[in-house]
Image (cartoon, rainbow, N blue to C red; front, side, top):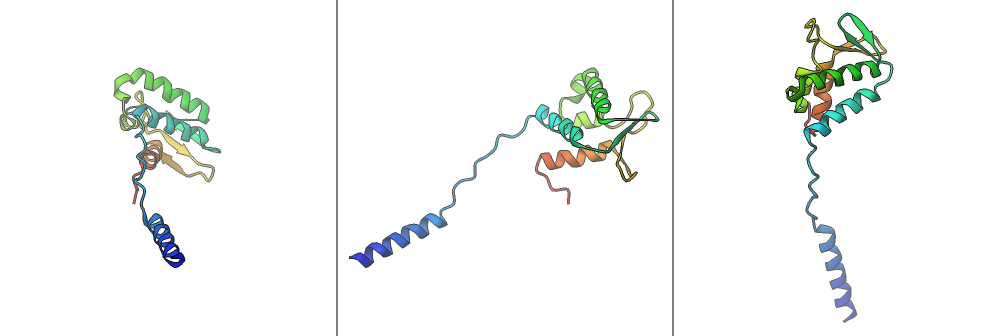
Amino acid sequence: MKQLLIICALFISTLKLLAVEPQKKSTPLTETQKIEQLYSYLESLTNVQFFRNGSYYNVTDAIAHLKMKQGKVGSGAKTARLFIDNVATKSSMSGSAYKIKFADGKEVPLKDVLTTKLLEIEGVSSK
């Protein structure tokens, strides 16, 4: 009888180990939350400069400019992708692309940086 109890206990333990709990679905981020995460990402960058209309700006000034522009664009920035395309890609005055200059001197279009980050936020592999 004792052996039967031990076998039953082992069997139950094995079943518990094999049991797969349903994965908890996380609530998808709203578009506003995605945009806020893009701003947070920009705020986290150190030793970078933002290039806009022939001049370089620090992170704080760049974000302030993007937020001001976002307010003017209104519904043209209602999704994260529209935000990138209509706010964070280029100057509406000169048409020049916004860029980020990293500490090593490398300049990358802001659109590329934010698009890559958005894919990460959305859990999409960029490969």
